[in-house]
Image (cartoon, rainbow, N blue to C red):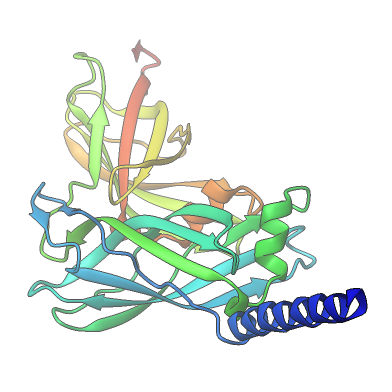
Length: 290
């Protein structure tokens, strides 16, 4: 009798084990990839609240970029397809990417800004986000890099969009009342060999004296107004003539291992906002105003 009960219990245990393993193998072979979760609302650049299904972001692939001679870290770049269900063209999308394992444990959450392409009304467009730098000492980031795309779940929540016809003020100059007649506009951005960025300026010297140097701080934001990076930016080497507009340039070296530098390098000029804070002006007669 005891032997019969033992055999029965063993058989029941084996049956349960087979069922559990079958469910696990089914899930591994058929990952339930979540490409978009409806939001309560999406905010447009004008402050309008639109339906959460106005734009849908689908993850298409995860691209691993191994470290090399010029990059001492591994990177992961996400490939997206964006579906525009509205009747207006979209130029930029802001949201959050959440990556989970098959047991819905969160691996990583990452803010995303998709620019560089226009999603036509009722159309589709593809985007590649700025690569994520993988810290080899952070277990979750290593897991993101090592796991196959099909063995993870991806959720994209869209928070804000900018329509293509929305005007964006790209340049603002901050100065003291004394220097208010001077404006510093960045008119172009050029990438050089993956290591340097050059900014072209149009400087309007509205004063009555020629200027030999303008000292200040350049702050750069993305198209949504989120701060990316700032640095000292002193314009020298070209005389800024009185009551005239002078074109000049400024270059800075970047470190591709710094995420903000990589973001700045990858963004198009038209998708950036520039703010220049004048701290000092040196005229050709060596007088200064602060």
